[in-house]
Length: 461
Image 1 (cartoon, rainbow, N blue to C red):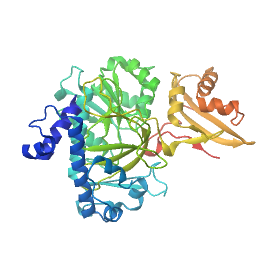
Image 2 (tube, rainbow, N blue to C red):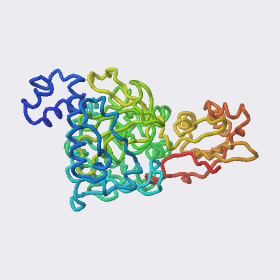
Image 3 (tube, rainbow, N blue to C red):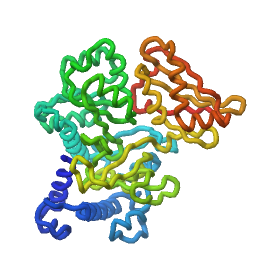
Image 4 (tube, rainbow, N blue to C red):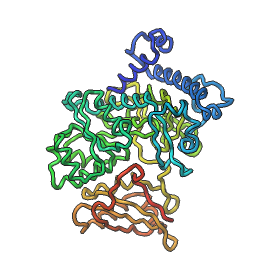
């Protein structure tokens, strides 16, 4: 497993000398590295990162004033949490380098901020190089077992390319080149037919893109093109939740294996990737430390329990993130993976973000992934939106759907799938939610084009 090998190598590389390594692990080589070895290394990096941040950043210096030095991983839970609002309100105070050394600023508003101000995330060239290195490792993992030489891998990238060469697509392309593959950055904003023609021309072994973008291309093209003859080996899905039916249909229609990637801008896009077992996200524990906390209290939850993911970057230069609340809900899996990565933990399935939960009826929680799992059972569904309003004291749920072909007969299917969602059914039975309403829209009307257009439930109450 590439991620396990990478971590073992990273531990030795970062300790610099065998003597330094032996002082921490008592081992003479990377063979036999244990879970305790990894956590000892992470504690070492965490302490160094805190020391660096306090010396270089006024934000962290003030935040950690008066704290005792940590001496064990248990002490990490006592360090204050940070979050999206800090990146929006104090980005320059969080920076650990002069502004002249910043190579790239990513600035965007997401569901994580409550102030309404956009988050600003800074990267140096060395930070960007770590991203490229991580992407290379991810790509090698995904392409493993395809029978395609990594040096000959052709990758078609359908992700934003604003601010090249350090754009999202540009950094991924550098990762492809680092493994001596051939990247091609496609145009996210052209028609499906133009994108299919580009794929036919380049004959890539893998396409990469967000779930909604690859799904729309698949749905709009499969009726006019034999996708199975395109020659794809892998489909790399990132940016959004990937439902079970979407994965199943894409694999069926393209005859290619789908891999789901977990990434976010703040730590540098590349976080975790599925192995061929598709049972959680492996991540590089030499670069990232994850915890799971109760989203209300901020307290660390017991092993195996679901909560909000909190991350710490262990090697960032421009803007270290220490105990940063991601807003994503998941659990950490500590049992060995069937792929053979015995000493690594994994991030489990990511069903939702706390900021995207909407309450209906008697405080019932609904969120997009519930609807994705239910509605995409209908193979003709291209996209949809959920709107929540209130009429005559009742909540009202309207589903606006984009269907391939004629919508005749589809209204009943949509209602049936909506009623299969437990909070929806319960709220209707309690007469706190009106029966679902369905409205069909024209083809392309729900087409989305950027980070701000990720799926969310629109609550107009």
